[in-house]
Amino acid sequence: MVEENENFSFEEKLAELEKIVNNLETGEVSLDDAIEEFKKAMVLVKECDEKLNSAQEAIAKIVNDNKEVVDFEVNE
Image 1 (cartoon, rainbow, N blue to C red):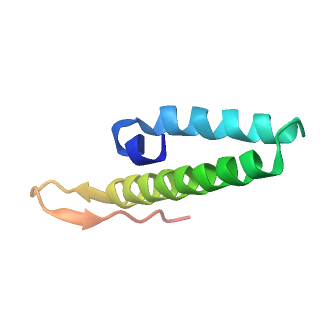
Image 2 (tube, rainbow, N blue to C red; image 1 turned 60 degrees about the horizontal axis):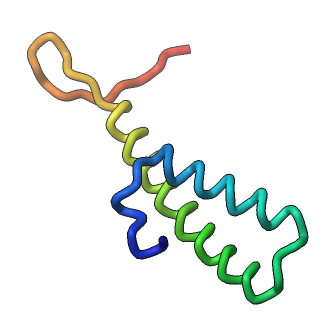
C-alpha cells in the first residue's frame, strides 16, 4: 500500500487513513502490526498534507482582468 499511494486520490488516501485509525483504536492489533499501521498512516498524513498545501497555494492565486496571476488576499 505505502509504495502505491501516489496512485490514489486524496479522498482515497484519507479513507485509508481513517480505516487505519479505526483499526488501531480497537486495541485488537498486535504491537508489531500497530507499528506497521502507524508507519503507513504517517506516510498517508504526509502525502495528504502535501496535497492540501499544494491546493492552498493554487487557491491563493487568481487571475486578474489582464490575465495576470496575482496573489489573492482577503481584506477583513
